[in-house]
Amino acid sequence: MDFKELANKYQTPLYVYDFDYMAAQYDELKSAFKGRKSIIAYAVKANSNLSVVKHFADMGSGADCVSIGEVRRAFLAGVPSYKIIFSGVGKSDDEIREAIEKDILYINVESEAELGRVELIAKELGKVSRISIRVNPNIDPKTHPYISTGLHDNKFGVDLNSAKRMYIKANNSEHLDPVGIHFHIGSQLTELEPIRESAEIVADLVRSLEGINIELKFFDIGGGLGIRYDNEITIKPYDYVQAILGTLTALDLTILCEPGRFLTANAGYFISKVLYEKQNGEKKFVVIDGAMNDLLRPSLYNAYHKIDVITDSKEEPRAVDIVGPVCESGDFFAKNYPLPPLNHNDLVIVNSAGAYGFGMGSNYNTRGRSAEVALESGEDRLIRKRETFEDLIALEQEFLKA
Ligand code: LLP
Image: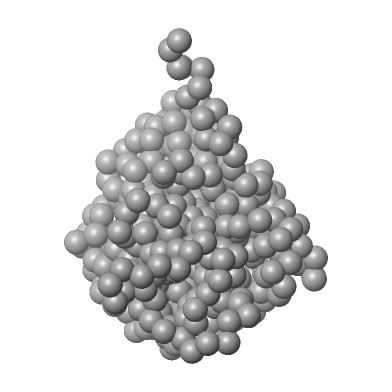
């Protein structure tokens, strides 16, 4: 990958995504499900660029969406309605209405109160809403607390008893059709056992529902497959699928899976230029033109991203903090990272930036968001323009008083 050429052509800071890598990840996961009815519903939140969503849609992927905005993106990108699901703890009435009208595969319901709203809105529309219920299996996924979701301490899903009550209610309703069951215990998972245990708990619930003649079609195992940022030992897709299948004996369900990070993280690179080096006492800093508003993960989770540099410098590395121009001490990409002395305009490449990178960006400090570029079969193409100052003020300018 010629980062220098890309930086010259599109300027920095810049996101670059290797579409061939994304395709290979998709294929690896899809083939692990071979012989089983399955749908991969790409978790749009990981990287919601329309061209990325379309790339997966073209390979047959569905979409896991957590806002009606994401549902609209999925439609725009060509994902068929029967492969779109809508999850999230706080869907508004308008969002529920639009999802029902668009006749998506199902709505993942996350509380008894929400089930009531979905039923009411389906009734108003004179429709039947397909639903799935997100079960919170109360299993510790052993990941960062901010991205752990399957414990009763977390706001997500409902406990087993509530789920059962909700299935009975839905099954008795003229306006609800319970078709699926869902769990998602966290993200960046590197241990298989918590996933297997959760699947077993949820599969037991499916069996007990069959006992009262509530037959589901979809077993939605969420996302969460971890990737290598550093030297993590990750779960192999084949082992993942085998562990899930092992819990589904005697159940004929289509498995739905919602990977985000696994498909996109290591396809992405965030490219930034060195502005200056500086030293405060003993502490050395490299100031680059990218910032926390472009890539928030290090600031928010203290997340590790491997960093490479493109430089002519042949000197020995020393420990530096790599920081951006934003007015926050939390604006950093790495701390005490070994880099050689760098020159103005050398390139700093932040790896594993394809998931939860651009999408978690903001305009803090009135910084326009970076451009995004796709690389596919040796060709590069722009998939999102760099935001301009005019873009940033477009929704405010008309209100300026003279
Ligand atoms: N399904 C559901 C219901 C989810 O909540 C998520 C992620 C996924 C699927 C996709 O998970 P993945 O396969 O990407 O792990 N911003 C954080 C990650 C937040 C994940 C939220 N939910 C980060 O940068 O690490």
